[in-house]
Length: 362
Image 1 (spheres, rainbow, N blue to C red):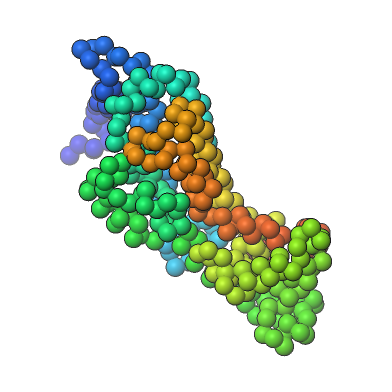
Image 2 (cartoon, rainbow, N blue to C red):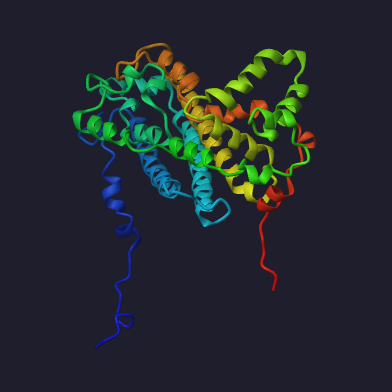
């Protein structure tokens, strides 16, 4: 029997592997008549948006990999699991930067160039990008938290066809990355009593009220760091509400305390990957906000205050989306409650040791 590794293998060909011929047939300008492209820049418009959709596919591919890891009952915070998530998130950030730069190319098209074919697009709109809606849903942007949610989920002019509407609705039922990250943060064991039982900075008052001695100590340091400009009473009220009573957005108090703790002690070896994960989510939110803002600026430049081709209010809608459609704004908001590194309380020896990498002695 012939060994399968010794048989001749047909070499791959670049064009066949990438299906180049099929790919290059997918640009079909509506202004093309009898092999004459009446609106020159329609080709640019199509290629830019097709490139967006290809990159959206890659972003969804990366997000699915992140969800597979974070859906596990316990992810290894200093092992391969967390490193995979951090690596995927970094790649998504870089892709969004590339997508934002694509607007520079699109803006080489002038308003008059766009008007040459704009009327052909009646009814079609970027709102109908199924993959972009899936990305938002996968990250955790809920319908009720969007600006003008009525624009998003309908099958009338400018909305989705029935098939895409149904697929997006099913997609939105899946656990989001936001939900998984919240659960991961909430189950962190860093405030378990054994870690703090012999803490030298523990306060009797905290023990008497059943509250973590660390957070009682930290609240005092944070209060002393505030100036009159910070509206101390209101800031402390928010601190107590966010970290001890109601939480913030979709994040519970437990999850937000862990997020703040990771940001404070980010230099501890075990926190480097968790901090990179949180930072990656905040960066993705920032890049998405930039993406929306660049498109707002482009719409202002191309059509002024006219209605969008899909029937939206155009500029007015995009401005509202820029201001409101954030996913991880609460994680970014935790930064409000940081203090200077030199004022951080020293951690108990047992916890400090647990946050360091251990090596077996040979």
